[in-house]
Length: 99
Image 1 (cartoon, rainbow, N blue to C red):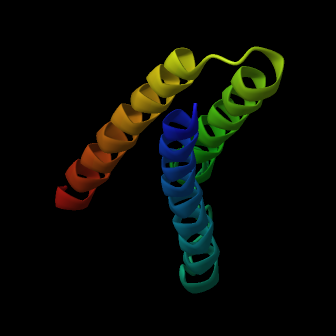
Image 2 (cartoon, rainbow, N blue to C red):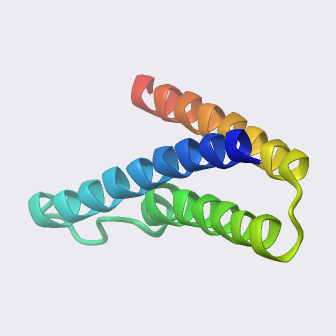
């Protein structure tokens, strides 16, 4: 159970980091972009809502599988899925930056 908790904690830290970056980007975009309608709703969904949703789902599963039913296999599987989604998210960022 300890290894699954450590792995889940690392994945949670990655998503917190992405959420922190997204909030900072939205604040700076609103501060320095002097055009009407920025940041757009799609920007907010991509930079804030996506990482926040992944973070919330991973935290809920962490508490459920630690305190309700101790299941390290399911917790490690969910953390693995979350880290795969993190890499897809980074790939999407790279593609968006290249455009």
